[in-house]
Image (cartoon, rainbow, N blue to C red; front, side, top):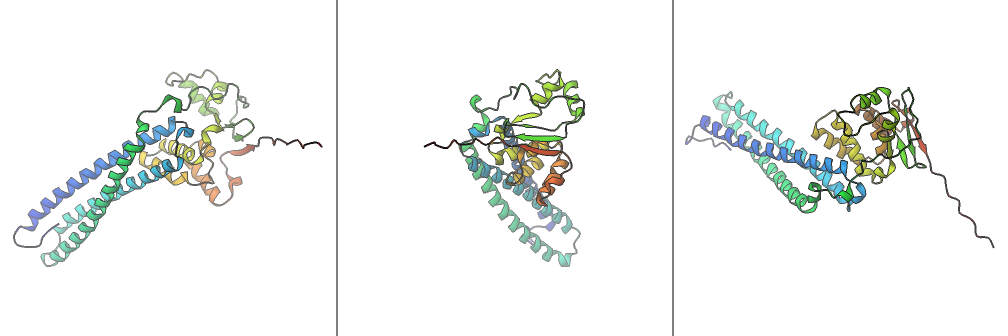
Length: 304
């Protein structure tokens, strides 16, 4: 805060105040980095863990939402502190007769912002304590919890051909989803096989292993939505944008996470979400969606 009195010059107080704000900005930048570490750990955890091994699904979902709020708060804190800093530089340009009024406004804004930051910092400390107590398992994943890297299915019902496959088939009968693909994408896997840990030597191998996914991965749709949205957005955008979009969409219970997996880019996802909101998913232009329902088992009537 700045004290309008003759004991210390305003210029000297401005310099000291800027140093104080720089110190607070540095703290929030560190908090931002901490948030990034948490986001990376959680997203990596969800990508490698079998969702069924997460004992308390709802608690984990609340943790994701809490982390999103904390990350949002840190961004707001940085914006507010930089805004205060900007207003300090502007005080130099204000006529002397208006200076006291401007300083009073600055001090009022400073008090409100610092009080809010103190609350946000306390929430972050509580989250950190809770994460260390309840989610330390993210740092050391048990092998029994991992999603297996082995091929999902040896022989897909989708037979390789020279054309693009523009159909997503969600098959309850086979308990897998057959994803749409383009020959150009298949070609990238073949040409870059030396750089991948999995070496695929044929188009059929790629279809079986990359474009055929088990429905068991989607047993818990909320976490599956988070995983698929995060991975899709992260290909094109920042860690924070991917995390926040994933948390936002994970509670969109009408959004099938398998459809997210089938989207080639964020634009296709945005188009599908728009169609979903308009209840016009049949007009989704990017690929066709088909469902194969498992046959009903008829119960035999007891004969008298």
